Image 1 (cartoon, one colour):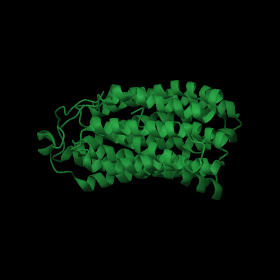
Image 2 (cartoon, one colour):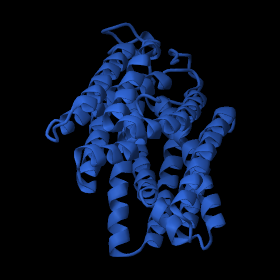
Image 3 (tube, one colour):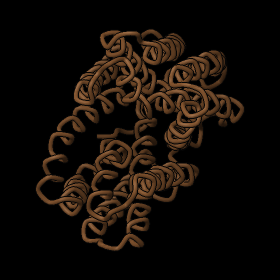
Length: 377
């Protein structure tokens, strides 16, 4: 999960490195980030229908090698024309890893809890990485930054090899073959709700720094607030891991969505720095909490093979990146405050859709306990 999300989390460092070393403009560097995230999302969506039969460990390993190649090639590139290709390769590799891991988690006995544990570890790993990358930039510019990322992908190969399979190569397992047919109407409703949530949260996240500056905080203070938010996100993940499905999925998913939306509005309308920081921490903690149920829990009930879980991850990242552009449009045309209302409105649209999907799952043939279908380590 850490490897698959690398392209999204380190985009701010990549943009700065490419601007300084290759003389790219902010728009050019931003487009490279969009290209990488878009490639990751589309790769996950394209691979999703095939993950029911393909060996997941091989998909993850192949994605890791391709991502490492893209990072290392970026490190030695001095031509602006080559860098889009290297970032495209990295995005495709990350998409392969992310799709395989999501599918593997969805095949386990308790996907909600396992995914939450993975999110907590991922955010902790990124906290450590964020301490390393700035130093790499200072020491060696973009070659040191991208070289470090490439080495990390190579070091993670033994971990990716341990992504277990729920079915032998070339055939679906008997448990998956005997599972009820996928309720595609519910899948579409779940994806629509996922798009609503991530459009709103993407719009907010793209401009949280500007919102902090508007309430009188300095750039350094906003940075400290974002670091504290990372800790809150880990807390949200750990709470989801502790809760699991003991309270079902409907209540955590709906409440998590509503709390996320209300807190997002509070961020945009915060009158003082303290209110801004508290609202931001609550919003991001709630978002990571509901993500465990959104990406792994409900999708595993919809499709035990993990294909829907993989596709859901792609839908989430694609709509999140679109939300950033939407936030820019709202800010330029109206105001930053309206982004908060947009995020809340989207969450209010998503909550009843999530409730409908979970209610029908619990009442239909997909309900009931599931056997263990494999492990992801």
